[in-house]
Length: 521
Ligand code: CLF
Ligand code: SF4
Image (cartoon, rainbow, N blue to C red; front, side, top):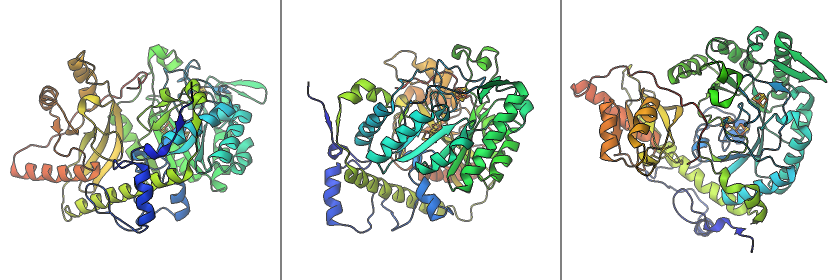
């Protein structure tokens, strides 16, 4: 059987055109243009740059984890080359992926560095918006340094436009900072759940360090010192650092404010407070002893309280160690080792860059549309804030059918505009006619119960009525429009309706964060 040759030229861009058409247009017109539904691109503006320096912006602008705005447009992939770990976390069961950076419940296919390098080329040739390669497990990348750095070396040679990213528990970090720098790994995540060893002893039963097993408080103290030392060493070298923290109610939830201060003072760029995933079927210590995870509002309240000078990440999807695709989608099943080894890959850098140029135009059009909508709210004064759930498959548009959504993105609307504040994973509503009402009641409404509205590309009459009955306005009039622009427009109308007496604004209840393993649609 002939191997399929992967070519980017037939891949449709976010606007629907094929890449070879775009390459033709590029050759004919090199200037600024408008694109997208609202057609208000601004020349040369860097959508989302804000007050970041040009060097930092260059590092984050197409990294889906380091820029919330980028995560609507760019994808990442992980390669599972690091099976071993040197610590034990009470939220991890090694039969599954790393819970730092993965969702428990799905076993990874482990790869050699050579297999990983081939896989990266295959994915990059199929998904032109894949810009970042991360190594995040399934154990700890720095407990497997040879495999980790060999993989980076191979990818840097063959796919030089791909950013390299690493996620670690930090125990061995100080020993590898120079190597990390020499391989141009510009993004490092450290999972830091505590800076107080007494709290750490409740999270980590042991660590294995310098050929010795340490337990309890002593183990947590060594781990904490090594994590903070590694963080300082990286930021001194200008490497962007993100800190992941798992929020464990009753153990470190209050303490994470102190962790936030400690990592901020050491130069961390971004803090990602994630909910504990803990269910008995995962077989973890926390899962088995009934330790609960936070509710959606508990998580948001903690993230809000830490949001000051430091950026908080709220769009993390707690990925598997072999995740592929946009955050929130999982295309790993397309790239099994068997499939990848059968592919004949052409690495077409020019086509990748052309595709990404179109994505940038779309981003700028989206940003301009949001700005224009925001200007219509000038002078508006109100304390009212509402949450809106959005069904989207990416590109920053409301482009998913209610029945096909496996997650909803959550935006907070206020007079300040539209702000992304999280996402909620749900069961599919449409499952061929089975269990639809059950899915609606048991997961979807509970997951977005704190939202005033849900924006969808399309929705049937029955679920619309059920949502309406739960006080959630199901809105399809913004189908295929930009999300933030639509959220602002809806909020403006909402305020008008409050003033006219058509609706009464009230506080909504809390919402649940869905527990358990994610099953890709
Ligand atoms: Fe992967 Fe992590 Fe790099 Fe991203 S994931 S190694 S920084 S490329 Fe991202 Fe996934 Fe959250 Fe991690 S959404 S779990 S933060
Ligand atoms: Fe599991 Fe990752 Fe913790 Fe190691 S660092 S025990 S692999 S969650």
